[in-house]
Length: 141
Image 1 (cartoon, rainbow, N blue to C red):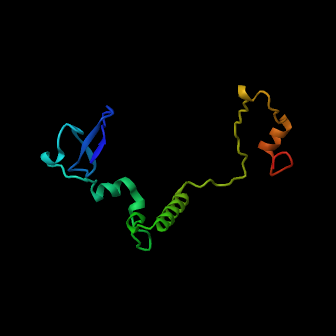
Image 2 (image 1 turned 120 degrees about the horizontal axis):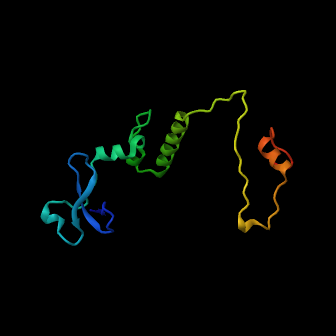
Image 3 (image 1 turned 90 degrees about the horizontal axis):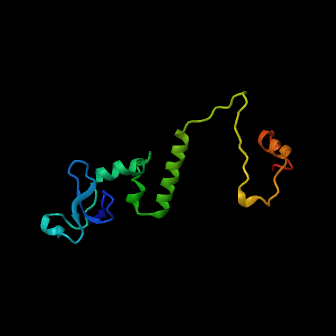
């Protein structure tokens, strides 16, 4: 198993498993400089299952019905459903904005880039209607 050199040298390095974290890390040997088998590094080395669980978080956990993680099921449709379910859970856990009777104040900075000089721009009243109107209109559908 090889990984990119974490020092950023651009070399591929022979990977070994960190005994504490279970993650793959550099053995300090460049590919081609040593035979991994001769120094006791097995072929096809992977991170430990605990390290994978830490890296992928909730996606690796069983759902509320006890179904195994999507990656263990091997079915693309099930994986898609689990990702969709996870996305819904994330949306439900996000901070919700509470509607108040106060006005929302936004700063809008209008810009015209140099390569758009030939384009016609909306009028001030159209911008006002777009940003301050109470709903859709003819100029701001």
